[in-house]
Length: 147
Ligand SMILES: [Zn+2]
Image 1 (tube, helix red, strand yellow):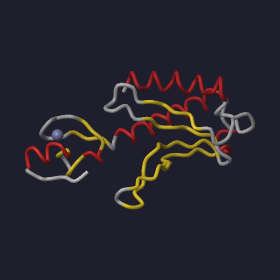
Image 2 (cartoon, helix red, strand yellow):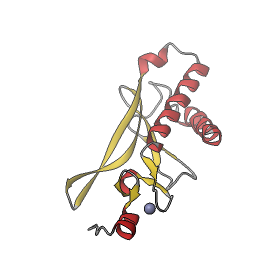
Image 3 (cartoon, rainbow, N blue to C red):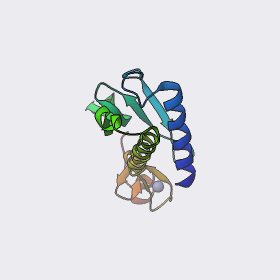
């Protein structure tokens, strides 16, 4: 986590300097800023966005309206109202935004788990059951999967 924390700190610092994401007055609203989890599994991204409410965190995903049509959607996992930031010093704001970003990263990471057969760590969507990935379910359990 140490390396990830350093990256998050650098990223948040830059977003505060360049995009004023910590400022209700100066931030551009509804512009999604993406942070990639470099080196982690398939390197998913989370986002941070300034809205009329405050700063919000989440990630892009799909909802399946019907079995064959995935609709892109955004899942929000955390939020921080502007009023909470107003009373903070610059350092406190930065610390809080870094902390919330780290939590959003951690909750994304929790969607990943390891397959008991191939030992690869993958997103939960790629699993047949709790600890068997789809490929290994076909290979080891003889289950035929229609994609
Ligand atoms: Zn597997």
